[in-house]
Image 1 (cartoon, rainbow, N blue to C red):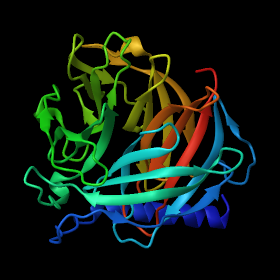
Image 2 (image 1 turned 90 degrees about the horizontal axis):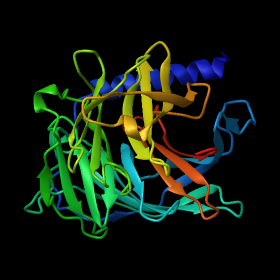
Image 3 (image 1 turned 60 degrees about the vertical axis):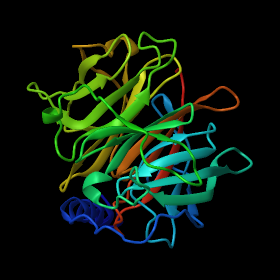
Image 4 (image 1 turned 90 degrees about the vertical axis):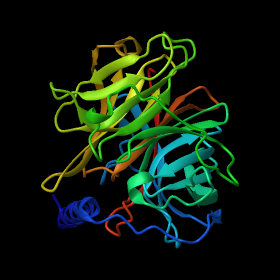
Length: 341
């Protein structure tokens, strides 16, 4: 390991440790408003440090961005979903904000910047800013037919919101998440919230998977929360990896983003493919690892994942990171093409 790489690993380890140990920010008193501001983007051309290789198993790195802004609120980007394939997106932060924007592209179709970016604080049913970390730790996000379903940690819940980007209101209702509340760990709740394919056995039902709420066998709780296949299942946990997001592939399999962290090794990520028919009541689902990357790659605290179709029919996988509002971490957007989907 080079001196630069070693220093980077040390700083990231310190940043992650500080983020997990730091007290939550105090509630803010000002009224809710939409904050629009510029986001600067530094293009990332190579995924592996010191290498021009673009192919990593079935995944081909297309490009990425390191994102920054002068706004104090920018960062902590958790779940996100594209509203238009590869362009307009919506997301949630674990500090209680919605964010909206669009990916810009260069002449070769690679991500080159972010436009029309805005953020607004989450509000309750009365339109008042919630503000407290305990009740606005938003992690997972699913979007369909103008309705956003958000998974919250700490004060565990699944809530529906109507998507109105210029004026997001309070929740429409909370949903039954099927998994007993006593099985959900304080900071390890539902980070994956996703709609199943309409033509699958789950008939479009929402599916949730926790980050690290474990059953007695050490596997991760998940559930189909509605429809004909409603019930609890688990996902096999291995090698210290926890689950931070997921999205269905065109063929009906579930792609999961996994992350591990230790002070000694730093952060690592995996992409794991779970067969669609393995997601069923009472089953322990597992699958093949498509990608694994450590600090020798352009990664950070990767928390968001979406899958979308490019205009030429290619299946694309996009990842986003949560910088924990730490100067030692980065907000990254990474984009891959999945071959042989």
